[in-house]
Image (cartoon, helix red, strand yellow):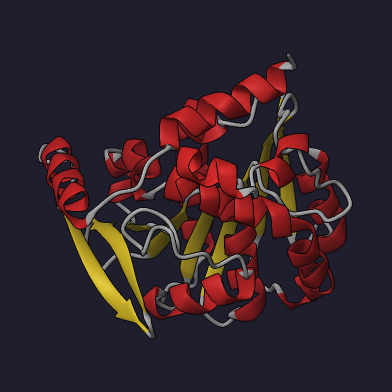
Length: 281
């Protein structure tokens, strides 16, 4: 059996299941307890945006520049827990992480695969000059935010990003998992991730001509041994934007989950973009 398939099965087993409100309350309590000794205060809230309820966590002072953290699929806002504890980062930024629409506390089980719509729902949470950080599918949403709301975005860090329609692959089990017989096995998070995967190529094709809208600096970080989202995704974007608007940082031998294996490097990259913000941001 291919190693890549086994890797995806492992991801499925981690994220299978649906969270009730009681379960979300318990998860909130556990996360806040875990962060009780963090360098900055953390607060979880549920906000209404149009006809959606979004779950988010804010860590740090609102007087500091805002960094918006977007998880992959499947995933949730606690994907960025190591960053909630990163003292040098919290000395210079307020972190906002959210369950993307359709995941965990942001109406798990409700499917929303449009990147434009997800960006539209996240947009009211942004402060001017926000740095957006996205991992995997979250990088797709971060890119869409930079395209559609350039006046609000101060920079973007795209980590192991699903970004290129030319290099995107559809795994052999993606279509199979659309079948009803698998729905009860997958759970809400994996169903949402699979729906995103199923529509990713047309979504990326829609985004391809919009890279010219991006005005903020973009730093792309990718492992050269990423078998889930190969690094040519980031190389393609770097070529689209050019050296004056983007910077590509390839990590030799690293795999897809560098969001957790390279916390120091990614945090330093975020701080680098904060340093580039105009003083009045």
